[in-house]
Image 1 (tube, rainbow, N blue to C red):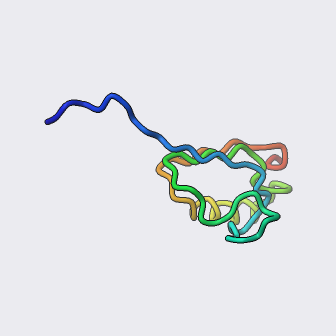
Image 2 (image 1 turned 90 degrees about the horizontal axis):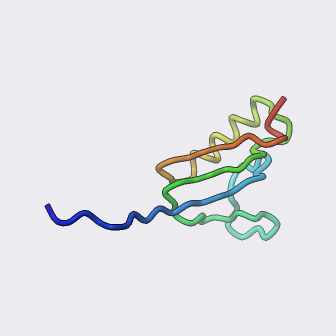
Amino acid sequence: MGPRPRTCKTRFLIISDTHNQELFPPTDKKHAFRDPLPECDVLLHCGDLTMTGEFAEYESQIRLMSSIKAQLKLVIAGNHDLR
């Protein structure tokens, strides 16, 4: 085995306020996030996945988060995510 690497590169993608967004449109300028999203190792969603915290909204957002390629996905609840 060779020498151990001295650094480890980790790419983070930090998003928030998707509010039930079903997909990341490729050209729609009114959305902050557009396909293709950058490649990442860690996705951090900083809150407000939903508008009202309804179960169906969470199902939709799980599908959206599943479409993002990341080894680790972390989600923090926002004020819109609580009922």
